[in-house]
Length: 236
Image 1 (cartoon, rainbow, N blue to C red):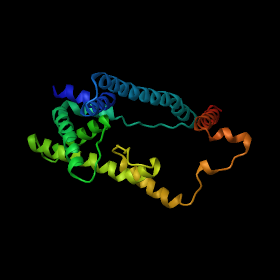
Image 2: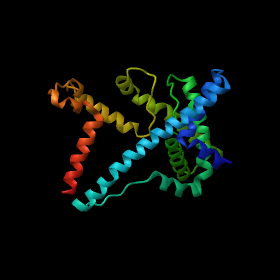
Image 3: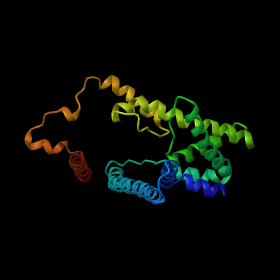
Image 4: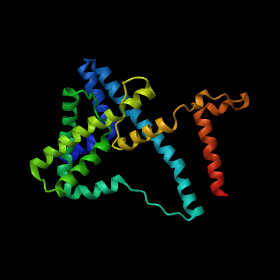
């Protein structure tokens, strides 16, 4: 049962769909609107994931070319592989920490000034697994492990989006959207460096380009051309 719940909550599209379902139900929408809104939310998230998959597939050959052309060898750490290995020994603890951690997230968001609900389901799963391993190695077990793990996960899930929110507000112009990712510390550090190094620099949107180069303002075109040049150099 715990593994079933974990599988459901760790699937981003289903998790977002459940949130949409709950939101529409709370708003007392009609059954038709609830079903339509939930399915559209899930499908929209799947489409976004599919687009990301296309981008990854387009970039993958670049790694192969760089390995062959420059005799480079790299290792890509895979969260899924590590998680699958750890679940053999920490599956139950991970499942409970994830489930109760999400409850703790809601509690902290309700009763603190950090009004953030972390919806990146697979990241929550990986973090719950890591916390379970760390606490277990530290000597905790049973109910105490689950309690400390859940509280820790809930705190992280409200604090990390709060750390990035000043920069998200600057980008989006509002507080409607937050950034849920467990690499937030690195992103915030990058943003702070950017504030110092890039202070006063002009945005590319403000650059005056000749009329025959205006098409470069379109990001899809400029990225495609840049990727084409990079691939051409690697092939040669």
